Image (cartoon, rainbow, N blue to C red; front, side, top):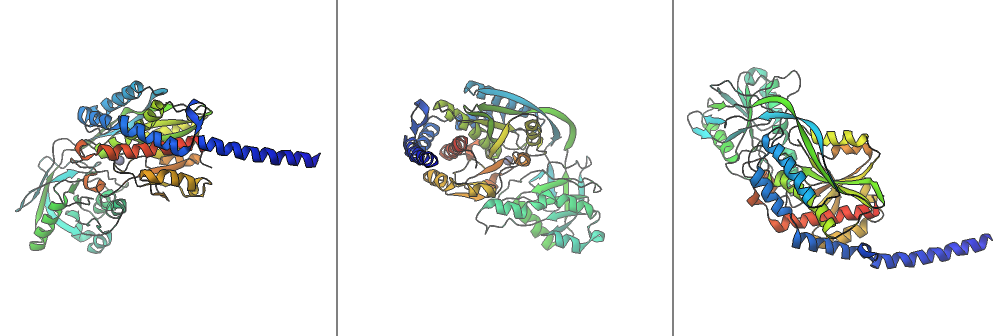
Length: 466
Ligand SMILES: [Zn+2]
């Protein structure tokens, strides 16, 4: 009895293996199971030949424009995205309310190296205004936080600290350069304030030498008063450096009109293709709908939004029926608060859904290169096959690394967090500048990357993350 049962099992096992190989060779849409590589090819064809991401990005950049949280354009972007998802035939589309900060730049900033001339500056998000007539003061130039410490409070008090840390050009991945130079924007103003400075200037966190200052958020720890703080373009940072070399008593003048208003109501925009077998198992794909208030937020992060929408559109157009739900989430307020990301995760706690994976595209709409992911996924039993499937489409690597800021709060659910890691060479030229406009995005690159995102989402919906 026992023996025959065992034998039955072996035969069944062998039979299943044969069926498995047949089903691997053949699949899905009309009863037959297509080989995964055929599915990937179909996805690529659909996105490259019929994709709407680029046209969507055009409309988002040109009809809506930049869209900082709390701005009328942010409201327009919400309605625009909702309408486009509905038009594209997503299974479900809804808005999720979140409360967001509302900081406004006010009139254009004025910056001047006294005795030299006017320079290009942008207030950092979170900066306070100067008095109406501006601030004019001596400048202390440093290239590190250690230098600031050495110079000490008595020499910094009442002056403007100038963080002139140069973006490292000898890194391959420009996000590493951002990690190196970024702290002078994130923490520089706060440190300057702690040493008694009355304002701060940060050399733009930029991989290019040009006249575009790069804004971005900054913050102040409690106890340190908020001070006016700006970014200066890389060319003008050099001009200021040279002026100080010639005359250490050189003064800088800035006029800022920015202010923080009361928080306002806004929304994440959500649309999905509902899973057929495990509808409560969710794969999020998203980007952030808000942008800085200069330029058009084309690469950051209009690209990630339209790519995420394209993932669902492509699967719908191919009449694919993913086993698990693939949910496009356009998060509000990544740039200066991450309220959308936290709001989504808080809501997710109240549902009976399981968020198995999330993929964020927030590194620009450039050619695909890699996906980054939590280390655990690299132990996945099917990873070799997934890598092989993606390789022909420009995903040369699945590596351990950051998923994304908006999906970060999902980590507490054990969600596997993936990040799109496209070619990074030009992103830090444009990031948070008036130069981040639609014309900087290449249609083929944008769509190619969107197609690889659809492939990964579909694969996760078929096989899960284990
Ligand atoms: Zn971004």
